[in-house]
View 1 (tube, helix red, strand yellow):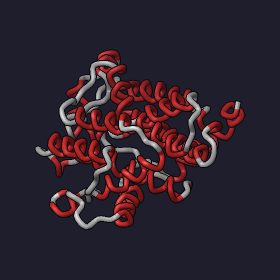
View 2 (cartoon, rainbow, N blue to C red):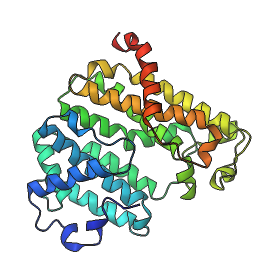
View 3 (cartoon, one colour):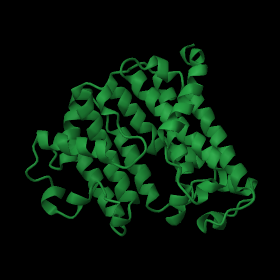
View 4 (spheres, rainbow, N blue to C red):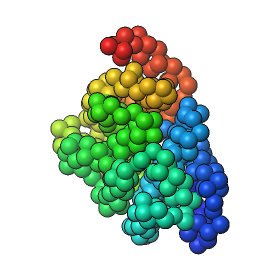
Length: 304
């Protein structure tokens, strides 16, 4: 796998942004937003130019920090890289930026009056990923989602100019559901990193030893456990569904696409059951259409 940040991570000139103007910085962030391997890329074509630039900068900031915390190429450097990323973030909000991500982000902050708190919450979650590899309760997992996923939805709402306060809890539900879906999708990937997001209380309830997951051996209760987690993740998607009709344009299109994509992946996880220990379900067009058709049957409930 080619890391999105690899070209500059080992180059001092690029690391400190020497020679980057605003146009080059915009291109840098846009390339990351369009080229990374994750399941939920920013759908830039839905937004106007200013919104596209802002969302690409936000994505590049978060994607880079997440790579620092998670990708093997940064082993032994994670905390130092994240600390420097926070230093550059704070400097950005004070009007100083040299790295291309922060040059572009400074423009977004000024154009959309973005607060620093969501970015700090994201960094806090990424720092936690450097050391925490298991979770005792589902509430602990939800607290992680509050910092690792929900800030992104809130920033998107800010960029869209969607100021109605009732939109935020719906956005939070969808973002949390997306993060949980990614956890269940990536069980086999995380096991190779000695990390388990399935809470200990649920492992105990379904009599699934943590060692069975880490060694990818499986256990009698693992399939039911996956279906249990998928069911309550689906409930969060449904709780956030009113946002799809109330986010305005182009927010409704964007959140609908993300919602449907997340639901499609979640369905794949549920159907895979115990097989998620051995392979990562990947979204395909057929799975997306199945979920979109199902959502169409109850679209009146979405609009209610």
